[in-house]
Image 1 (cartoon, one colour):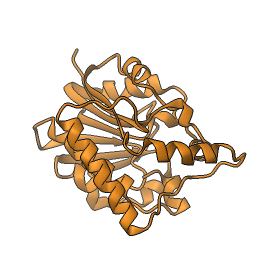
Image 2 (image 1 turned 30 degrees about the vertical axis):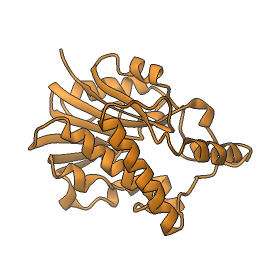
Image 3 (image 1 turned 90 degrees about the vertical axis):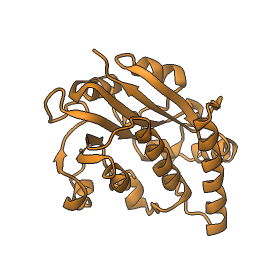
Image 4 (image 1 turned 180 degrees about the vertical axis):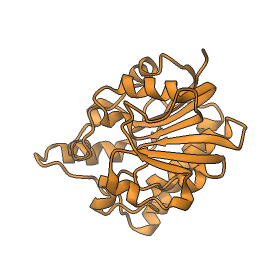
Length: 237
């Protein structure tokens, strides 16, 4: 979770963050290895560290001292204050780099991706998630200081250094309600984080919907659009 989401009162157990847990686990399973050396770029509040720790030793970086202070030492091998555009680790150091909702915050996102490429070992993997569809850009994005949202085509261009294993849209089934909500937010001149604190029954329903969508994606069914894009790419020199 972004530190700004945390300050705004987002709840990490809501359907969106649980769905991202499932997505991350699904992508890590594709690597078919454990005992990995993993870097989490922009760790935020560290919601996903329990999952990452199942696959190896986790190193975390963030530009926020406040966010890093929330990360228990027992949940990571090392934590550093560092920009994604200039990662404070040597080349060919990690087996996996994870970047969940980070690249959209960075002016030079190509430089950040190049840095992820640099610190990965040959044969290493970049796992990422980013917001999709520029027309969804709203007061929520402004509040989180997003620079952009992405299309599949622009994401493929961003990942041009890598061998692309998979890039897919997701959160497609809930696209319409999100579109309506974000369009309403966009009318506001004030930046405002779109908190997703729903009644328990509705929250569980949305979670089940996202689980169904992820199941279909795993079966090879691509979604034509969605509120997010995810991907897994491989470094091959």
